Image (cartoon, rainbow, N blue to C red):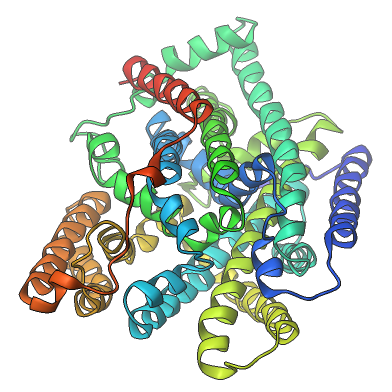
Length: 536
């Protein structure tokens, strides 16, 4: 696949971004650093993040090359239906802010394994901590590095290996300053990625309008619908070739909820941003993230659909091929190559911002879980705060090093976004069952949770290979129900569960939101209802 690379003006724009983010991060680090070294301050930025910083940081950490490249590729192949991951996430974030977040904050939870340790026992916590570390390092971190390097290789002609190393090093620089630096630099990253993403969307729509000689962005949107009507249905029928990826009503009534609630509500990588804030601030931050989620398909999915329409009409015939095979993940980089000088540098910076912010957030969560839930619990229980922060930084170096070594092995993938979703789902049913029942059913016992933790990967693996015809989202839903039944049966069989001393005290007052939160939630849900009605 050919690349036109960056011009001088693009490099100037890109380096302004690079130096600007680094300088801002250093300024935040010096301004907000305290004389006393604190692990909770380093890992959580306790009390330091505003609602807009929390919301922006959630989005910056969540949106990465897997969206710009992977989801855009799925937009090329599948269409608007892939947006369900984003739009249903907006609804899920509201549920997390309303019901799950108050439980964490009332119990002063800093990490997800800590919750499991206090609600169940150290064994459950350790098993899940190891699962999370393996998933974060070997699936998430490596896939972000791979997709990021692929994008830089295609758009700027940067050598794939050098791109991986460069992204890893930049992410480490941002990450070692702790959550305060990540949180506030993520605000800049989100602004850059949204503006750069919108520039690419504008270019894609402009190309479509020019190709069909019907100028105007709104004309271009109409042309997309006209030329690729099959790409504008949110609910896929069973005869659709991509039904296994997005199985019909499952995306709004089924296991997509399990997928999203587990990701946004039981995932250190995401929820960590709000654990150091007050409940009102954290709720506003998550609501802000839900609002931003509505915009993501505009900047990642629409360009993919535009590339599909142009490809079907004779453009990008060679650029979309790898050998003789059409590679959907080439769609976004191909469009970037067509941006004019300066604007391409901005879009390139947006892509890099998304990649680096996501890498930094993931590395910080890996560091937090290993340091507080493995190192402090089993290796150095009497470690000082300074030693914990130092170990956190060492963990970042090691995790990023592993990611850099493994990422090149993912070049065999066609749609990396679907790979990430499917293999992340192997532990999702067990995680969500353990968390949700542990929060809201006092009788849930440690033995039941441990059984579910041990069964989730074997059941997911068996389901994938014994019933390959079942869509992975449906399979995840079935396994979740099986694990809930197992937890219920084991807990009810234990007479001591009737007065479980580790059951959480849940009060109705914990779940009462403010008026502004209610208004914002209703508006977001109204937009979602309209979108699904129009594009059903």
